[in-house]
Image (cartoon, rainbow, N blue to C red; front, side, top):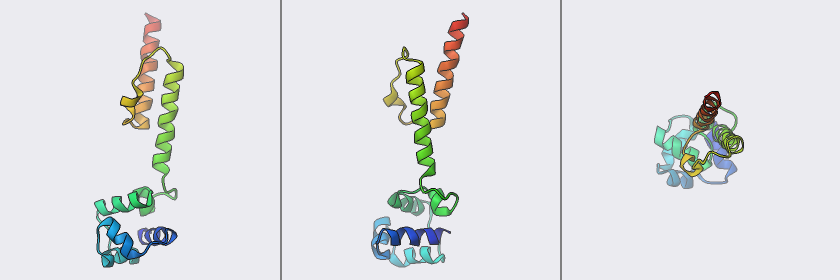
Length: 124
């Protein structure tokens, strides 16, 4: 699967094995072996390949058919919860720039916590 994906991505970009090998810091023969399935890249090289092609490592490994599913879904979820927090709790002054590094799951926890704390105040 990896070898097929690498060859397909490279040929679609119309780049030679030599050029790609230089960009990710390996010998051309090493890269050629990745495409032939005779060798597997180490984790760092796999990440450089994913970054170069702007796809997820999961896509390269055949774990998903969507090249960027994880990033796209996480960003959409994160935006969803930022929007919910801002619209449902306009009186809460949050520093969203400080929260940019949070994942979508973290943003959901922030949202749930704010909702919980607001409900506690109503009960008092």
